[in-house]
Amino acid sequence: MRRDIRRVALLGAGVIGAGWAARLVESGIDVVVADPDPEVHRKTGAVLQNAERALRALFPEPPARRGSVDYAASVEAAVDGADFVQESAPEREDLKRALLARADAVAPADVILATSTSGLLPSRLQADCRHPGRVVVGHPFNPVYLLPLVEVCGGAATAPETVPAASAFYASIGMHPLHVRTEIDGFVADRLLEALWREALHLVNDGVATTDEIDRAICHGAGLRWAFMGTFGIYRLAGGEAGMRHFMAQFGPALKLPWTRLEAPELTEALVDRVSEQAEAQAAGRSVRDMERSRDDALVAILRALEAQGIGAGADLARWRQGREIMSKFD
Ligand SMILES: NC(=O)c1ccc[n+]([C@@H]2O[C@H](COP(=O)([O-])OP(=O)(O)OC[C@H]3O[C@@H](n4cnc5c(N)ncnc54)[C@H](O)[C@@H]3O)[C@@H](O)[C@H]2O)c1
Image 1 (cartoon, rainbow, N blue to C red):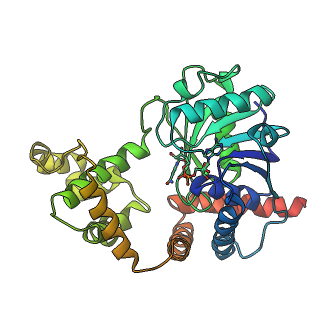
Image 2: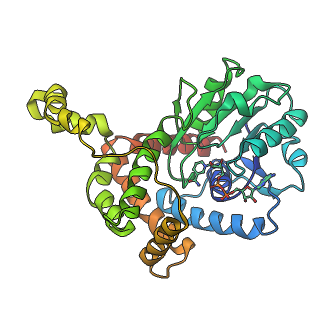
């Protein structure tokens, strides 16, 4: 698989595709966007502007070479000449299959075709490609330009060298590739997030808590720990000196109690209205871009704090910083 990546085709430039664009150009890689939205220039521009602001707070020196952003009139035109393709179109299997097949028809066989899908199975997405061996999931997290995690998952027809090659590329742009070894709906991270989301929807639906109360229950407590230590690490400590066995013995009975319902509630119009109205009230009239800036400021502060500790995503950031310093010496 091709390892020298200088130009990436981005198929779809919504929340995620534009986030990829920001991370890539910051890493000196040119991007070519294909997106039928007539407003794609304006929307991508707004994300790039916010990303630039956050990235300068993370790395005061701009990159030695910033990648360029171009817009193509078709998928084929974007893929032509690209060394890597990242598809971030809406989460619909038929649409993604067709887009990957169109890219596959144009791209040389050593060009990796990655999809940002949040949980669709790569074996199905690669099914219409002539060269399915180069198709892989590269599932990022929003905002792509600040969060390092990317889940990498191959399908039944993915060639053995594709996952390591895609992972090496993602690591080179400051990311933390996690190989999802078993192809499973929702991969690892979204299965966890989905479980929380389903229970949160039940709590709103049943009138137990508002969206704001649920968000406070996360941000003021467990969310702070999750920035650097996962559920198993945290619960190991919760068992005190006696450790995980003690924790499991103590809280084991709760697993039998009705503390969660993993079957999601019906998305009735009333529930959608309630969640949307409460979430709007939480926003208190602030625009999405303004809220993104607040989110990014907090993420930058957390990332820098974790970098000083050398843990979690801070270790990824330290590696990214080191890579940029080496690059700037060669430029
Ligand atoms: N939003 C998230 O938090 C998140 C996180 C990780 C992964 N993802 C995944 O990333 C993908 C994109 O999600 P998003 O949130 O950016 O969605 P989005 O709706 O913000 O963006 C999708 C973009 O794709 C474009 N598009 C539609 N048809 C297209 C086509 N035929 N060719 C090219 N582009 C086309 C749309 O115009 C739009 O700009 C999905 O697969 C989603 O599951 C989303």
